[in-house]
Length: 448
Image (cartoon, rainbow, N blue to C red; front, side):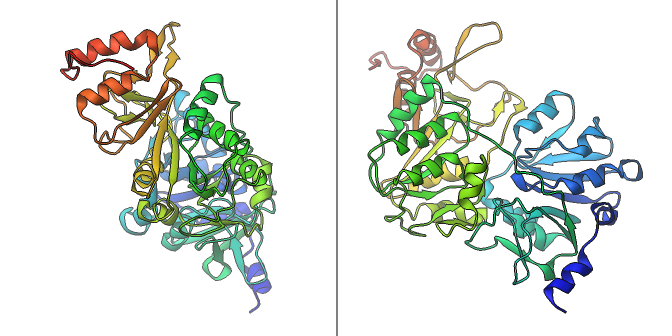
């Protein structure tokens, strides 16, 4: 049987495909911009026929019909490996969103070895090529693990998905697919980076000052890392490399400015390595069939021992707050989960393990509370419920608009002094008082 004949035999409507889902099933919904659309609509129509459907999702960028039709979560239980803005909106409106704590590099192993079951895997893919392969698009991550583990695999073809070259595990063969659905070819999620604030720009200046020619760059999610990327594009740096989990628009600008040759990378030289891409059409057009780019599963991109094979790896990520011991909380607001551990811990470890490398966690020094008061993000202790994303023994550089401080090898009193030294000047005395109360402030301590 030819691939074209096999395609025709497996091609069904979305409504027909979701008939395989039965009460009690665990269903993978796709990742990032590969979250299913037509299949979501079709499954929502079956709400009154089903019960106890458990959904796995990752950074869902689109409104989902299964949520709109079941706002109390009576039928569909929504589980997220990493929460998106849409997930937070759902949670704030009262819809139950259950977060699964991860170390991102380990997720393929969780799926293959640890989770109790995966009944149906659904995902967006590119059109089939002449060899019978559907490309996963800009969300390699752990899709191959899902398709291997699932009892039934359904692919939703979207002609607008860019074909992302690997690497490995970037595609699935028609022989591994049970049903094919041709969707309505909706555009991919457009996620522009927020415009950088003055604080973002100042932090970016400090971070770029820590870099030199030949560095390999990992940027996390958020305005500050994006500001770093844009500043690099306008800098005199050269021969930079890319080894990251998330590819964003800033990498396109760095490449087009001639900064990102990859010539000095320790592994995958000349390649821009990533496991998922999320941004605007500028990015999706750039990665489409581009041999400069290589997408890999996350247990390759994020494994610290692999990432650290690139010398001078500079990893740049955000935090919500950092306590005066150096614990970084980057994913929750007290008890409220707002994102996830994702790959931050992976790359904090990798940055320090890299020869000449640095791990940088950045944050603005303050925020405005609901009562209008100025509050410090450098804190005496993390708020109750706040999750420690990076333990104090792992965190390396902390950067605010007031400077940088390296935690490695520092005693508790040195950490307190250094971190308070990059807090907002108006709030330092309060932090010193807290450090004294916690017996980690020496009489001879002083701020630079």
